[in-house]
Image (cartoon, rainbow over all chains, first blue to last red; front, side):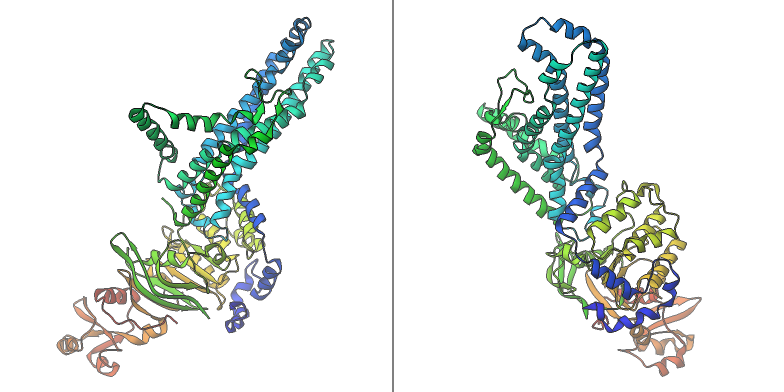
Length: 327
Length: 294
């Protein structure tokens, strides 16, 4: 090994360097660095995910902004709350429940929308921006494999963003609940029914479940396709990713007068197999009355075919990154 | 110990051959300058060594196959492939955090020591730094990594004279310790003259000349031939002839033609400048290379 090469004797002859700060004799350095030695794959993954968040601050800023905006809008509407609650006192239980839940469901819907938009944008940029700004050459000069890099990027839509959405929702719902309670108490009304109808924790968990199942795992092949195309296209990766899909749908429409492909893609993006949860059409997925039914979802072949396809796209993206350089 | 070993290394882009069966051996502790005109294949050769491009032929860097083991190899190899590859959005402190987080041989305190001598602040973003400062930052990071091979591809491109000088000075004084190996390319040939121990001339994907600087100096001689001897001198087949202030300057390869005593009788004998040598050697591509870069 080069560490104990005979040329090592020259190290201490290099007296000029000892005047510089931070350049202790090389031998000591080497012992130190070898003592601190190995870095685990998990640690590399952790830092690479952090790097993604440094670069793409919108990943957390966008949902936070949506939540903040929603809170402000709600704050304005909240001054009507005492009057609204008095009106609701007479109505039947179902309508009462629906009225109370409305702002929370709307908040959740907005955060899900933010999740989908951020994910689509992130996935169609993730492997493109590092080539566009040439920084891929710097990242490749570090001992981080293409697999780690691509998995770190994929973890943003599948792991980081759902958790982030969950945390933000929890805080947001709790904040709305506390503010509403404060206003009701100030106007001399009871807050007991509000708290019994709004299990914030359960609603947030339902949102997490819904985001992971319906918006992360189910459309996984679409996100991974975007990731792959972001690593392949020289420019406009989003167009390169979507145009083939549009073209296939168009050809099918003209040639066969059918629209199976378009339906399939649309279903992948926004639908989901019916039994993700038990929800009659008028009940929102994060409604506390929703009964989640993971078994039929997890057992549906469509989910696993999709995940397999997603894995193939990711593997292709890993392989492709080895060949890619700056553009 | 052999750091780089290439045998029959080839790489083609479409129909153009960027590397044509290049064979090269670089031993530990050498500083190799790779010199060639634009499109000669320098960057392609370095990219192959760094695992950035696939190739045909045999190539081992520190005993590893760069294309299939890039991430492992990068624990022992560092490279600066261009002045502008640091991501513009990153903060200096984040950059240090990240490299410290993923590189087992990076010593953060050392990098901070180098940075303290510059005007680069830790909270600055790369996009706020001047081109020269970005180069300093990259060099500070690379010098704080205890690597065995450092590859520099045009590391000072676009920098002013002062920065270029500082760059090579700190490379020699603070980094090179005699056991490390450095491979570098540049167009500013004269600036690396005092830095390199070995030189490779590369043209049209082939190595035209490969030898140590000592060898180079003893092998070639330049003679300012007095007008009356010009005809006689030309018979000795100089590899190049040029006119400077009306005098004929003839360049000889002592290995194949002429002996020093005879040449001295024609006029003043000097060691040729590397740039002149470069032009001369590139002129006749069929020059026989001296084997082994060490």
